[in-house]
Length: 173
Image (cartoon, rainbow, N blue to C red; front, side):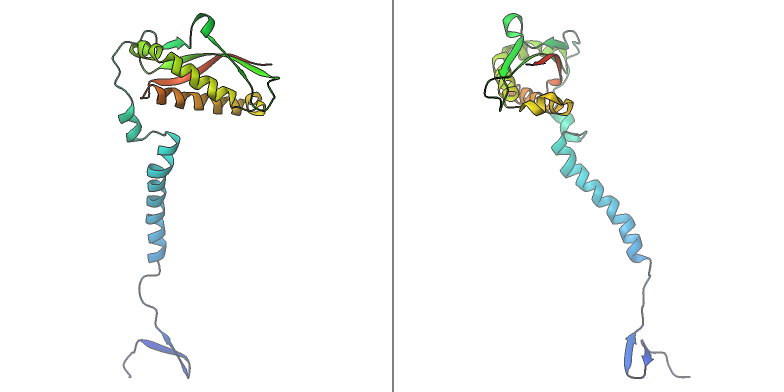
């Protein structure tokens, strides 16, 4: 009986190499590597951009002082309570009147927010006046404006002190 060689012949003139190895190896590699790759992309690329629950967010959040009173405060007081702005793209024929309340991570930050109120009002006026009428009329557009306000307020306060922005009045005329 002749010795086996590493090639087989399918026709008299063509030599075909014999397949060796495990045919399940590529399947196993895909089953293991794809979930690992998806996790890495979500953890390091997607979640940090959308402010998801990651280790960085918890490190940036200020420590709570334990004082829970005054956790939700009105945005401004008296004549400064309402923000009135012209709506972008309407040639100053339409305006928005909005009142807001801010939910803080802790009531102990109320004084810090009040100290920065002029800068916060400026940011709110800038953001709300840049919104087009079509965005302000849709719930999704208001949510976009709310998220922009939240981001701007926390940027002005140099920390994640504001948890939520609530519109207590939102009138487009």
